[in-house]
Amino acid sequence: GAGVSQSPSNKVTEKGKDVELRCDPISGHTALYWYRQSLGQGLEFLIYFQGNSAPDKSGLPSDRFSAERTGGSVSTLTIQRTQQEDSAVYLCASSYRGEQPQHFGDGTRLSIL
Amino acid sequence: DQQVKQNSPSLSVQEGRISILNCDYTNSMFDYFLWYKKYPAEGPTFLISISSIKDKNEDGRFTVFLNKSAKHLSLHIVPSQPGDSAVYFCAATARGSQGNLIFGKGTKLSVKP
Image 1 (tube, rainbow over the protein chains, first blue to last red):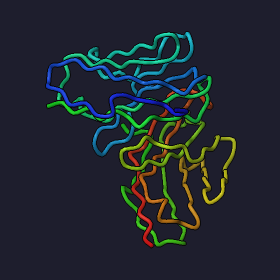
Image 2: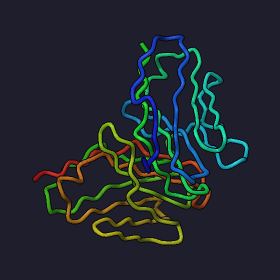
Image 3: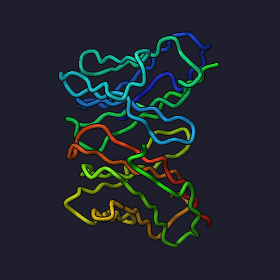
Image 4: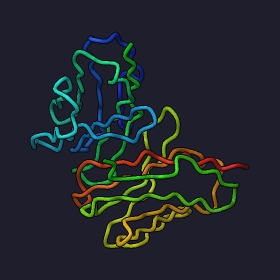
């Protein structure tokens, strides 16, 4: 498809497990962003990749969170030793050369039991 | 501390009337602002944006107004349609047109037929 693709759309896991969330950006978009939306809250910035530059990790809430972007395209967000407060919708966005607007995927709804 | 505030969690409007959604910000470094619309279980969709060098931007039924001295922006939708019913997020960035976005918590708009 032409839009940002995220998988899985839903993920339920037990507390303490590791999870991996995937984002496939729009073809040709060099910038990729991860956000999360907790219940009743706005979107919270997590991490930003732009081309070959070092990522902006300033939004990651703890060292249990990490992300990588291989080959300048697909990105994986990893959460280790999940906690119940990690339950949220994780949204990925991409943009052309870092310019606005950002285009969002439909997100992964993560539920930690 | 919230840098982007949408103080009305919800708004109900009659079809055909004007919808006005408000947004306030505290960071004077913000210089680019966007509105996104979000339906349930979907990612946010870009609606309209404005640079801080302008005070108005219009696109069809949607107009965004920016008052820099008051650190306030508003989105006007006229005429409102039932299909406009969604959550509207205001977002801002301090890096010109690039970089991660800071989001408000959203306003849920209901347009009654």
